[in-house]
Image 1 (spheres, rainbow, N blue to C red):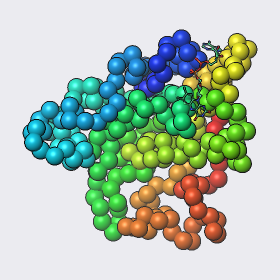
Image 2: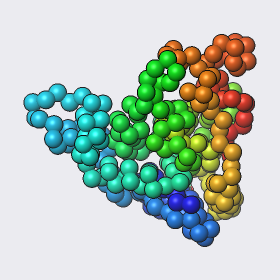
Image 3: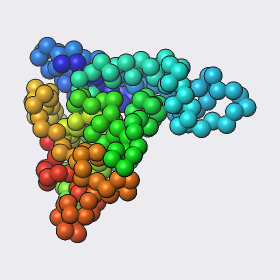
Length: 266
Ligand code: FAD
């Protein structure tokens, strides 16, 4: 398989850097092709601004969605963005790796998503009618690819449990899993989460590394999180609400978008 690992940590000697090396070595040992986008090392520009659209007239108002769509359609996205799109199209598996910062991904990685997931490429695609509402949530340009997160946290596992003060990890990661990866069509695998990372000693590291190697070995067969497909009949269109007869009575929130209950993090 071809694996793209997008890495967001500023320090190569960090725990995240060591885990990335473990993942890449295991994938290569298994014969997979791997490309790493090391965002800090690349000096990735995280913010969308006028520089992304050099053909936009200087007196023209910048409308990010429209500018993105026009630039994508005309093949005029900047070279750094086009290179990342090519890597995404090349990959069978996309892995995003990052330390949890303020309950989400570091800004540089969010900026990678914002710039690379262009309009007309990752969103704003497909027919909108009373039968379908675009190619998204299970359909789209990344359909057929698998995706997963490798995440480290400072907080303990219990802090991210069903009643933990930080909120359940599956809920915190839902916007990335469902809103960023499932949206353009990826099948999303349960995340690899390493809790309490700041306290890790060398024994803990070896345990964590072996757990990560096991996840790399099972990338092809790990069952994805069973999100409901938007155009598969479970949602009212155009309201885009789950049909009232589906899900447990009274259920609401993120979990209703699963076609069955699962424990997701490994
Ligand atoms: P490092 O600091 O590089 O290492 C962590 C530990 O691993 C060190 O003790 C190191 O010695 C040890 N280690 C063991 N083996 C190795 C090895 N082989 N190589 C390298 N190190 C090793 N946490 C949360 O839970 N929720 C948040 O919302 C959150 N927000 C944050 C926001 C910011 C801006 C920052 C800076 C931190 C935040 N944190 C949060 C904590 C953050 O998630 C952790 O600091 C991070 O996950 C640790 O990963 P690291 O790669 O930076 O670890």
